Length: 384
Image (cartoon, rainbow, N blue to C red):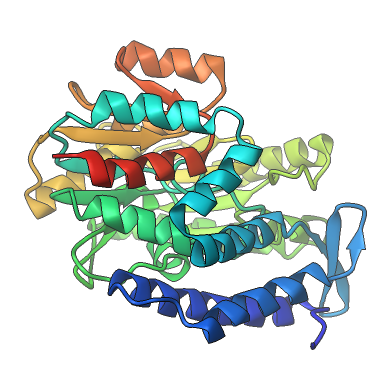
């Protein structure tokens, strides 16, 4: 078994595992049994990843001779869940969830009971942290087989299913496993770009806006070339160029960077944006604590949000205000909530729960993305 010692080898292995997962999903959606050979590839891939040397809780890899520390928890745990799902079926996977999430069954039963009689027509959901578990690194967040199958089953019950995220559309396509049919609409860059039935559409940007984005991108990449800043392109979301937006990580979920360095980098980026846009006419900055999101303002002089993106996609695809199910996990998803919609948020943050309930008093809350995706799987059997 070839050892994995470099980032290049890691990404080659992940690409191979992603291809295997896509074949498995395609077979399962056709009603076929998973091939033993493909299941074997997942197991071998997991063994190779598990054998990567560690320092403490982090895996040690090398890129151009430089040591890089990564936590592969997401990739390894999702592989384990896929192997359980493919070997033991949905009930075996549910039993696995119950071991790790004590409130799993209660939360699933409560939400399904409340929604199973509803005439839901449209699902609008965030991805990471909502229907997909968070990954330590954006490049490692490939969707799981069980996740893709559960989502597909629910999407077949809907007239429209839209996954809207601040991530770039290309990344959303690459990390997803579902076929590019009409079951799911992928909306990246907070909805400024979307994929529907194999066709990509982007909200038009003015020439001046494009020029300003290019100028800012050049300045930020220049900053990331500095030795003391290179780490920020390797952790979490890294550097992402999106349609109408640039994102740079300043921290990851494992706190790989000291708070002092993270805050200092945030101030460095703020100064760079001010240099490029001194009158603050074009850009606004949103700091999530993990990512610095630099967004083009709308004509109303506000940052473009996911609500604006869904309005754009809905108009383009003639999606009416049918009964919607809205799912999110952070404050950036509050803009998705519309009057009369059913709302589920994945959070244990009491402050966020209160913010959600101010907009949607009937909102429901669950503790983990695996709980929500299991609810969707159950609802695919229960909805009229």
